[in-house]
Image 1 (tube, one colour):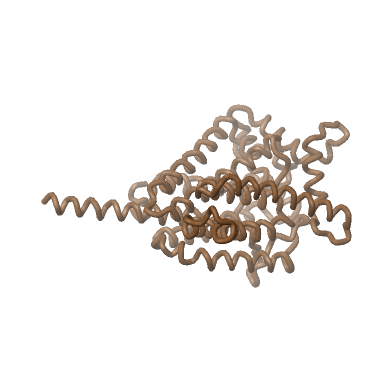
Image 2: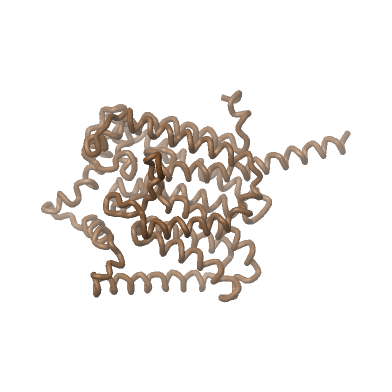
Amino acid sequence: MREYLKYLKGDGVIWIITLLMLAFSLVSVYSFVPILVKIEGGTPFKYLFKHFIYIAIGLGIMYWIHKKDSKYIWQLSKFSFYVAVGLLLFTFFFGKEMNGAGRWIQVPFVGLTFQSSDFAKLALLIYVSRLLVQKKDQLKSWKDGFWPVILPVIVICGLIVKDNFSTAGILFAISLTLLFLGKVPLTKIFLTISSGIVLMGLVIGLHLAAPALNLLPRYSTWENRIMNRMDNDEDNVLANAQAMNAELGIYHGSIFGQGVGDGKLKEYTPEAYADFYYSSFVEEFGLVAAIVLMLLYLILLYRIIKIGLRAESMFETYTCLSIGILLLSQASVNMLVCTGIFPVTGQNMPLLAMGGSALIMTCVAIGIVQSIAYKQDKGNKEEESSNAFVSA
């Protein structure tokens, strides 16, 4: 392992966890796709090969990024934000619809799809990190400090919320957390939260009053998911079927699981390979493996935070912290949905769920963290060489 890690710069623990999860995802995805085979046809190997292609792309991008100086992240952050807005606008008007939501862009000629919000999440957090540094002495001013920082958050979340409320909500919460860490006055953060709640209430009211406008095309889906989660009526079993199957899968997993490929509930749980990944994982690998999985995510978060706190610039600190919180939030929501604590949402498990734009952007995010870690390592080695020269 050390022989191969010498070619990988940055934090070795993060590399090991990332590579282990990606390798394990090949096994789990192959095991969890029977429901997809039933719905869309094909064979498990077809989806395994597709997932492998996404992993190869993600690893290639991650390796390329981690060798680059982290200063380029700052330089590209504004451009990336505008690209994200453009992609979201394109998706808004011309997005490919799947499962009742127009979140995807069809990549020409290759037949693959890309979820623009996956790119927008990372682009926004990096851009906000840059703005917090640029406006650090003006954050008490609404006009010169706060509005320039919060406006990109409103734009991105506003474009995402129509088709993906959970992603918009999580991104908005992480952005506000970043603002808190950036020492934005609490009164401004609380006013932003209050205004957001009021604005969302007005939009929902307008949608209900004038349904012909179709302002929130997925409002009925959101309402049903929340009400079904609250409703324990036995007559509502059909509406709660996917959530109940997820909970039953966890129950059947017991301590050590049913074994690889031997899970049964995954064959009746939609998105068992993505949105309900944790349920399928526990069913086949058990409680012990589930605890190990949670520890791996916590270790990953700890290492990312450690890199962020050691960073030379506050921009790098904010970037690492926001990436760490984003990854853990997605994993946590997936677990909470599968255990029945949260209503059903569309958040999958980072590095483990079946590949796509989410997997690639997770690899990009980790590549950025490793780029910052590599920069720190080079600085430490130069300092040690300088000290050794002085001592000599």
